[in-house]
Amino acid sequence: MGRHVAFAVPRRYPAVVTDRHGRVETVLIHDGWNFRLPLRGNVFESAFITGLVLNGPLADSAEPPELLDVRLTGDPGDPGVPARLLCGYTLEWIMSLMVRVGGAEPGPVPLRVLMVVPPGTSDAGGGEAALTASVDLPERGGVYAGEQGPRLEEALLSLASRLPPAVRIVGCLTCVFAHYNPYGGDGLGCFRGVEGDGRGGLGKRELYAIWARRTEDVQETYWCGEFEPRRSATA
Image (cartoon, rainbow, N blue to C red; front, side, top):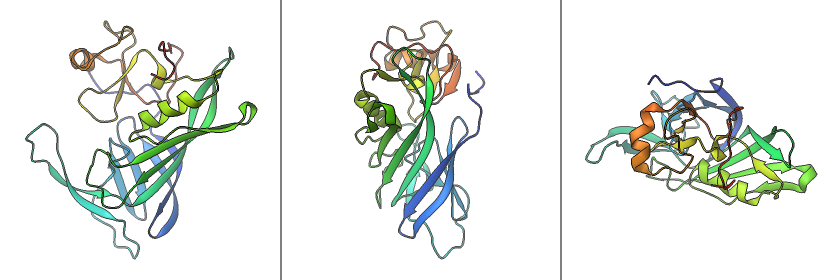
C-alpha cells in the first residue's frame, strides 16, 4: 500500500526548546511519519518524538546542542547506523485536540505537551524521556494534566483518565479503528473499512497480518467524521 495520511501535512506546532544555552522559540513539524525540529541552524528528525537525531552536518555555532553518538538498529542482530541523538533539553509545543463535552459536537482545545529529555540518554527510542500533556478547560475547572509517560500515547491516555467525566478526547487516540505499528515506532494506522479492523481488539500477531492494509497513517490528535469510540475512553 502507498503511504498517505488522512490529515493535511506538514503540520506545524509552535514550540519552545530550553537547554544549557537558554530558551529558543521554534516550530515542531510533523509530515505524517517523521517529526522535524529546527534548532539553532540544525535540523533534528525522527519517527520517534523522543529520539530526535541530527539530520546533516552539525552547524558551526557558539551554542552547540548536546549530542550523544548512538547506533540506530532495526532487526535483532542489525549492527545499526551511527547517529547523533539530541539530549539534555526540554521541548514544549502546542497542538489542537478535539474533545466532546457532554452530548455537544466535538470541538478543538489547545493541547500543551512538555517533553523532558535528560542529558546523556542512550536510548534512541526514548525510554528515558518523559512527556506530560495538559489542557486548559476554564468552564470545567481549569487546567488538567496527566502523569508523565515515556511516549505521547501514554501521556495522552493519562490526561484522558484525569479529565472530568463529561469530557472525552475525540480522535485517533481513542478510536476503535486506530492501532499502533506492531513493528515499533510511534506510527499510528487507521483500519476503518478494512476487514478485521480491530473492533474486537487486536494483538500483535493480528496487527502484523493486516498492517500493510491500513487505510491511512494518522496521528493521535487527528479526528474524522467516521470516529467510533472504544468501549473505554482511556484505552
